Length: 113
Length: 113
Image 1 (cartoon, rainbow over the protein chains, first blue to last red):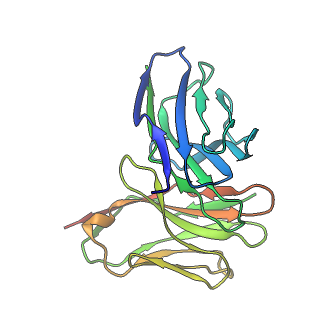
Image 2: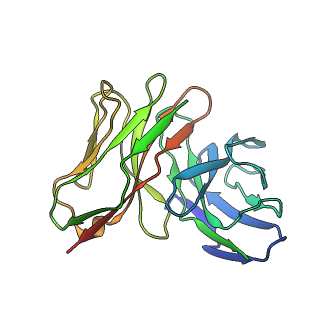
C-alpha cells in the first residue's frame, strides 16, 4: 500500500538536544511538507520541498532544519534553538499537479522537557 | 493573502442529527477547496474536494459545494454517527508557484449517542 510513514509516533527529549523526525513516502510524490500543530490550532507550515535537493522555508522555519537527499525522504530536525518544540508534527506529500491534494502521515508527537 | 475561516467548535450533536460546519475563504484567483478530517492522535485524511465553482464534493455521506459568489464551502451531512466525531479542517490550495495549502483552524465535532 502506498502512503506516508512517520516515526516514531511519540518522542521525548530533554531541552537543549536536537532531535530528528523521520518522514518517508512511497507515493512517488515530488513535493513534501512539514507542519506543526498545537492544541486547538490549525496547521502551520515549517518547510516544504518541491524537488530533491531543494527546499524552502515556510511560515515558522526558525529553529528547524530539513534535508531532501532522496525523493522518498524528508527528515525534519528540531534544534535547540526552537523555543517551544513540544507539538504534534505532521508530514505531507503531493504530486505537482495543480489541483492535487496533500496526503498526510500519522504524525509524531514530540515532548521536550 | 489567502485565508480560511471556520466556525468555532466544539460542535456537539446527537446521533442522526444534521451537520453543518461553515467555511468561508479569501483568495485570489480560483483556488481548489478541501475538507480534511483528523481523528484523535492521527494525521489528516482528505474527506472531499472541489476544484471549481459550483462543483460538489462528496464522500461517506458528507457534501460540500464550492460557492464562488459567497466564497464558501460549507460541510454538511444529513445524519451523523458517533464515528464521525473528529476535527474537521477546511483548506484551500492556490496554485501558481508552489502548492501552498492554507488551512482553517479546525472544528471539533462530538456526536453523542
